Image (cartoon, rainbow, N blue to C red; front, side, top):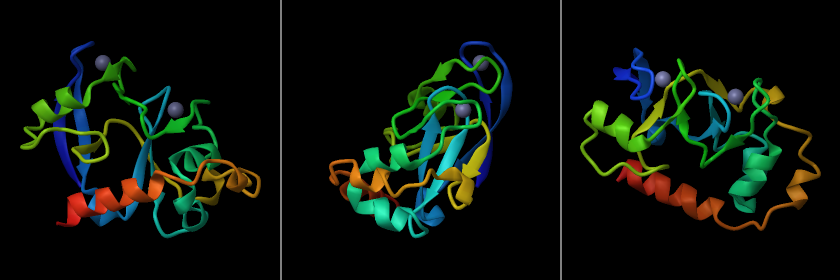
Length: 152
Ligand SMILES: [Zn+2]
Ligand SMILES: [Zn+2]
């Protein structure tokens, strides 16, 4: 994990953000849709081992809400830890001098706020019912792409 100084384009506050390499993390990042919190969803730990083939939507549904009350979602934007305004990945990439074209899920993988781990059992709802939902597509392909991108 590397830290960089980041200045919010909305409120002008400067603070440290963390960049990590998803290939080494063996985890999948999702963000809260209401605050700057990121959750790391471990690939190989339950219930991800069961949810894996059931699609992104099934994973989102199986996660308990963030402690702020928001929902963890793959597509949720980054948020400033000072003003909570949405921050574009392009803006972050520019400030940390990311050498490639930024793309959600492919990098840069950064956390502006707190990082929580899905390995904590409290992160998951009782998923027996959520396992029956979701279309079962998409997640596997996305994970495979992620792995290829970071391990190639
Ligand atoms: Zn939140
Ligand atoms: Zn701000």
